Length: 200
Picture 1 (cartoon, one colour):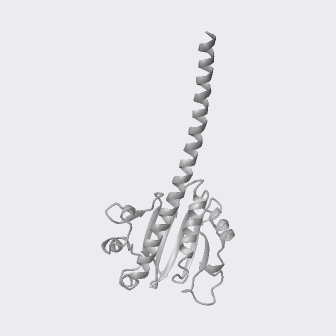
Picture 2: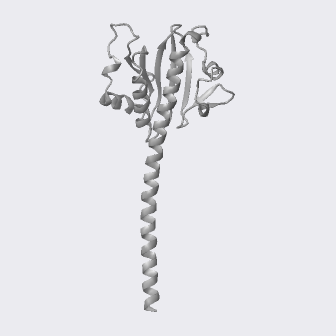
Picture 3: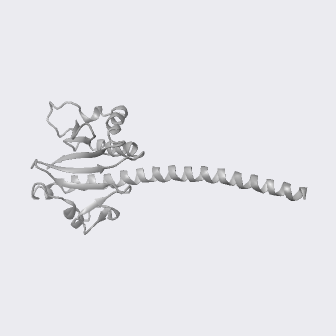
């Protein structure tokens, strides 16, 4: 009987150790998966940015306030996994809404990310998007965040690239990690639009 008792205690101990190791493994897997998705998101952004640069002259003939997604699809210029709903909407590896469109300014086209709802990951995702956009500062007019909180509607922060007028303040090359963190805090629990603005 004593031997059975010891065996049961030992078995419970082994099960407890396995449980602790499983929790650690799941946590490590979740972190690795999140890192993979950040890298995949960067790849997706780079592919779209390069297409916006390459086909810039094609977009100048599109109507104002028109989505450019169907045209990107025809040009085979988008990561296939991002395309959904009859080739008119995009979503990235995190399931975030992405749009490419002309807005009211006839001289620009916009690459827009939408972060909605509360998520612990929004901060890192926002920073990843901004870092990716910043890599194209030479091609951009500006990068901006438009956030909506319970107190403030449409609070906008813009940083300007090399295609912006020379007198513009807050140049994109000064957008360092600390400033990105401050900007992205607005997206931790609020709706945010993150914009990259290209000239046509």
